[in-house]
Image (cartoon, rainbow, N blue to C red; front, side, top):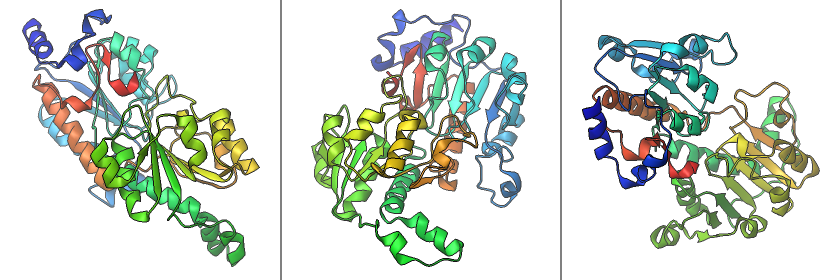
Length: 386
């Protein structure tokens, strides 16, 4: 193991290595897998009767990312469940002896410090998708665990969904659909607050992979595009999209007809869209959030929708997930909320299932993952979570 560790550490780029010496890493944890059989636990959502309808529906418990036969043929144990919450859930039974835990943002198993401490054999945490904030990343770093996700696997899926939600809110689509479903017909009740997308100012809070793809897609609608981020997207992409960099979020918000959230959830961003920030938005502006529910002050969103200060709110992310039946976002006016679906299209599932298989294969062979996939490595968190 000492030789393997030297090999791994010797190949780590300085981006990840320069703080390693100052991190408290549990020396009993392995950096990579050895040649022995492993116990791998996956927590996914149930597919139910739909699981058999489409063999490409890989992201559910029943189809298990399409890797069960492959893992078991290599002598590994693979347990997949949707039961993730509470002291008597199925996941809890496997925590003491699992080596790898695969989770997903769409049905997140919350990997707390307490769970990490009890998982003495745990070496690797993999996220099937993008976004690992359901894991206590600092605890994982202190424990010497590797956390990785399938970076890029659902970028297009989420960006397309965001564009759809912008149009749904601006066109006041859901009340129109509801009329037909309920046997009604009242054009005025819909179009009095229905707008074109063309000519509107759209701002994205965060311009990483998803934010950039959204800007590219909005270009065709002849919008005025703004983005707030720590870093510029570069002159070439700014010219390609026509987007303008707004370094000050407080200055961007009042300019926007629609604000789209595209930042990861971290200690710095948790609750960032609070009453103060929402009040900076123009009256009647709309807010789209497919990033994370924890970015929002829940009650501030409810109050703004009820008062009309927000013209609408749409997203697919909640906290916790699934949300309780009495979650106020279910019942507030002018909302277009859904379950967490944007990043788990069939196409995205195929991509993140392939990414999980690739990383497991590398793990079994003691090889590094693609650099962009690492979220925690050698006691250090990726930049987006710091």
